[in-house]
Image (cartoon, rainbow, N blue to C red; front, side):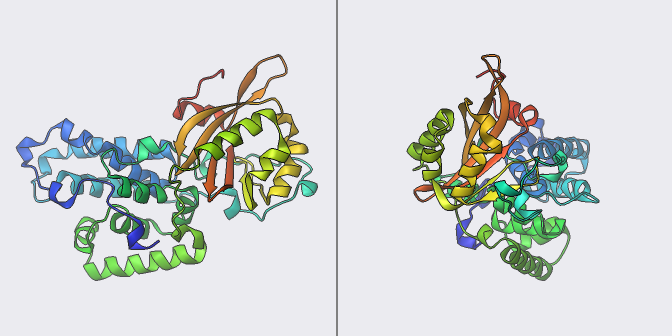
Length: 340
């Protein structure tokens, strides 16, 4: 990830002035909630955990408000608290992943059953862009921010120790200076720069594509609408024609994934054929991609929540389909109804 691909996700440096302690009010803490949520989401890989972390940050900050002496901005102070909360939460926890980071790709012919469902804590989970991206960024900043909530990037971040993760996010996503990060983490500028170099090297080795911008620029509306229509019609030939030749499909909480448009087509006509007759509802943007709620036919003339599809387009084709079979967890988060 190059410095040029990211921009500040929060107020500009000129907006970081300190408040006097007696001026500190709950509203001033709330102004930073969305930015803190995005920061914690990138740190933790789960929106639910990020919300918990931000709530704990607000509680700790408010309880400690008498000790806030205005030597730094409220924003810096809150990020210091949030960083400590996230590091505490990451102690002893497993690294979250995508199926691609756990097992090799499989083929339809190799699958005799879907295998075990792994727990929620196993997975990097999607989040609505509107809940983790800044609401006051300019268009160029917004594109840069979206690039750092891609699922592949979040999975790559999981390979970093918590402190390196914080350094990378503060320096290259929030655009803080090395001196600001050193002050926040209680280290030196040299140690911050060293941690940043190690973090970059790890990302490049673990997930080369994590350093490449692939955020949807908003030009894929027609392609994604065609994907939704083809899926509802269960026109597999048409649907696979929309995919890159080496497209991938994953289906958390099952630890299996497919590579290649032809293989995805074979899956849809084989084990996936029970999805025939599904309804699809658009669910906005998630992780710099499009999200759709899939409602599978229930055999009684109706439909029931089944999966959240996070569909990333690249160029003129679809490159990734992450079908999260976790409707109880994800449909409420994305505002999807119980009945289509």
